[in-house]
Length: 348
Image (tube, rainbow, N blue to C red; front, side):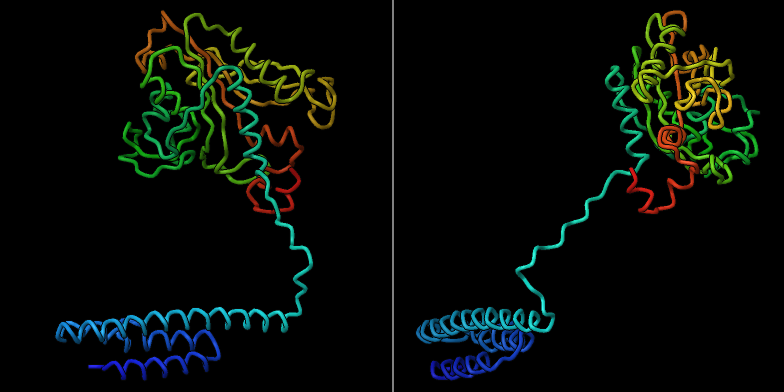
């Protein structure tokens, strides 16, 4: 057990060691030796319980005073050594600290993110809400509820990324990567009754071989409007307004008959070429460029979610974000969106 004199001698030894410390590592070792969990001063304080009340008071006061003095001495030495270390580094590196600092490099949004935001802003302005759903989806929501027959090519193993399949025949419980964002429409309609005005932006996946216009993963923005008295004219007017805001006030749209399992009637929608204004050129060929598919919601889909097709009707549309971006910004190859090339990203 240390005495009063022993503690004073211990303090002088520690103080001398602190003054002679040449770097922060050596100083920390001194701190551990005296003030650590098993340090000399700490051990004295832990053993006070074995002393008589008079000794405990006397030795305790001295030990605490020594500890406080050592903490102060170590802090002052640490500040001194840190300042000397900075001065040493500055001398070695020959850095002029009066020079202005380097300007931080600011990033920018990826073109796909920008186009998605532009599209969603337009439809939010038209009164639509954003809806989201899982990218790993059940066959029921991705195909069956959307009126897609079991023998449809999209439901084959060659066209869809299946995660779990019960047999060679399609089943409601098969698990897959969604091939479009249309399942979000089904999920929303099953949760709420009409009116429904939503857009569903997100990723979709198909077993496409990568080439200038195809990618196994791509982005879509789909839209759905269901209410009383919705007509094909409402669909055409909505798409015309979207086209004017997205591509320019002078752009026109053209609807061509098409087939989709979940809409009837259906149409492919083209926008007039920005170069030739519909006259035909080497860019577009015919004067028109395809931008999306659309149509009136099939009554079978409405009945599947519990809506009465005699009371309500609706339209749906879907567009590939990459295609919109390629048309608007002249990107020649869809793979450029996913190459992680900063030279490409910084252009936009």
